[in-house]
Image (cartoon, rainbow, N blue to C red):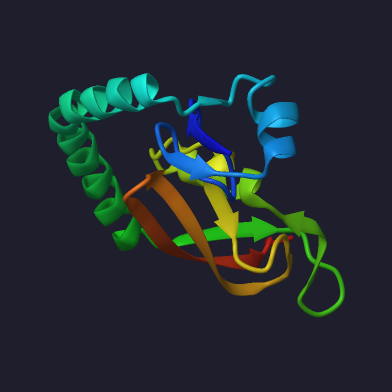
Length: 150
C-alpha cells in the first residue's frame, strides 16, 4: 500500500514522504491516527507541487539547522550525576537529561529528536548521541557523564 506521510513516523519516514507499507499497518494504524493519507494520483500531483514550492523555504531551514549543528559540535558538555560504588550511577542519564543540559547551554532541542547510542547511560564516561535537527541535518554529539561532587 502506497501512502503519503502527514507527519514524521519513527522508523518509517518523514513528513511528505511517499512510503510503501503493508495493508494492515496503513489501514489500521497510519490512516486512522492521521499520520498518512492514500497516495492517489491526484494526491501525488498535489504533493509534488507543494514540495516544489517548499524547496526554497526548506533551504533556509536547512541552513539554520546547519548553524545549530556547528554550534553543537563545538560544545563540550559534561552532565553531573550521582554515583555509587565505582563509576555506576544512581538511576541513569537519558535523552531527557541531555535535552535539559543542552537547554541550559542555550540550545532548545526536543527530547524525541535525541537518541543516545546504547540507550540510557548507567555509568560515568564519554558517550555519543545523535541529534536530528532536520531530516537532512543529523549531528553526532559527544558528551561526558561525570560524578557529582559531594
